[in-house]
Structure formats: structure tokens, C-alpha cells
Image (cartoon, rainbow, N blue to C red; front, side, top):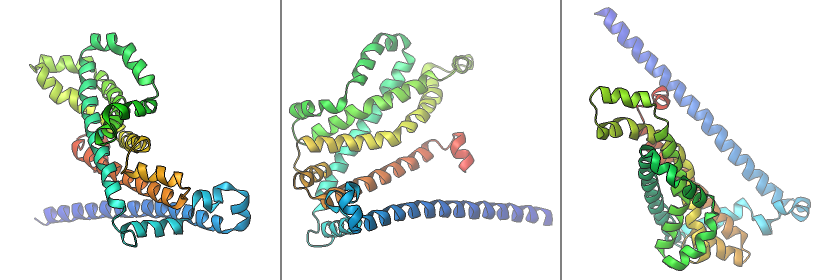
Length: 289
């Protein structure tokens, strides 16, 4: 009995030690990240306040790059100050279009990529057309998309889908093609049908490749929506950026860019959590435990 208790205590001690090490590892990582951001902001603020630098280098000219202090004040005005509530409708419009476009592009890219990985002949026949379409500068199609779908939500969603779809499609297709034929044959010898093989082998393997593309998919979906808002929109973060450019208001522009960068970080972090939950069986997350 005493030996069992000793083993239990030693196991608990090991778990506490592992948890303590993980905490300090995360703390050091956060410390360096915050430190680098703080250093960059300090250089930016100080550089714009030194006359020699601001007059001789455009990168420190507050007319072009504003100042961190001015950007913080502008964000405060948009959220709690004189223009309280001004930011939220624009942020909401961009977020809704980004998430809808992301969900549609990831789901359709995954399904089509998985289908093509199983239908090799179809993939070979359509490969030149897919490559040709993927080689086109998709940003150049934004005015055409806006003409077809109007200035509202639909054009933003279609732009995001058009930019992200091929990214997810090619990753999923590669993931489906990377499955060893011997594994498929082994499953068949055990009596598994095609539906069971797809559910238990093809989809989990392709998911790993798809999640690899998700951080870029989030960023490109957000970029696609913002660019669509450049072309023709009366709401959204892209609208704020393009109007601040027209009025040469660098504080507004960098305030909007700061919000977009924070949104991108939050969205990528959420998808990382989703990946950890759905892919907890993979060696990467088992090792992180």
C-alpha cells in the first residue's frame, strides 16, 4: 500500500514539475514577444519625435507613419471617447465577411481537394485548367467581382473565397495523395469499404495538411475582404483605410491596420485551438501533451 502511495505521489510530482516547466516556458515566450513589440513601439515613438530623423527619413515622419501615442488615442476615441461606437460597425462588417468567406473556402477547398485525390484521372484531366486559373492574379478580379455581385456582403465573401479556395484545395489534394497505397490495401484486406477508408484514413490524413494552410487562409481571407472594401464599400476596415488615405490621415490608417493585425492574431489563435482539438491524435499534439 505504501509503495502504491509513493508511486502515486511521485507521478503527481512529475506532473507538477512538467506543468511548472510548461508555465515558465510560456512565460518566457510571452515576455520576449511583449518585449519585442514594446521595443518596436518605443523606437517608432522616439524616432518620430527626433527632428533630425523625422525630417530626413520618411519612415520616421509622423505625417506618413503617425505615432503610436496618436494611434492609441485614436483607438480610444473610436471605442470609448468622442466617437465611441464608431469602430464596431466597420469591424463587424469585415469580420462577418471574413468568417463566411473563410468557412466557405475551407469547406469547398477541402471537399474538392479530397475528391480529386481519390479521382486521379479527373485530377490529371483538369490539372492544366486548375493551374492556369490559380496562376491568374486573383486581386485583379476584385473589380469584376464587385461589378457582378454588387457593393455589399456578397462581393466580399466571393473575393475571400476566390483567394483562399486554391490554397486549401492544393494542401488537401497533396494530403490525400500522400497516403501510402499499402495502407489503403491493408484496410481493404481487413474488410473496410471505401466509405470507412475515407472516414478513417483519407479525411484524418488530409485534415493535417488542411490545418497547415489555415493560418495563411485566415490571413488571405481577411486580406481579400479588405481589398474588396477598397474597391467599393461604405463600411468595413478597408473602407476606413481607403478614406484615411484619401484624407492623408495616417493616424486613422494605422489605427485601422492595428485593429486588423489584432483580429488576424486572434483568429489564427482560435483556429490553432480548433486544430489542437480535432488533431489531438497527431504526434505533434501528443508530444505537447
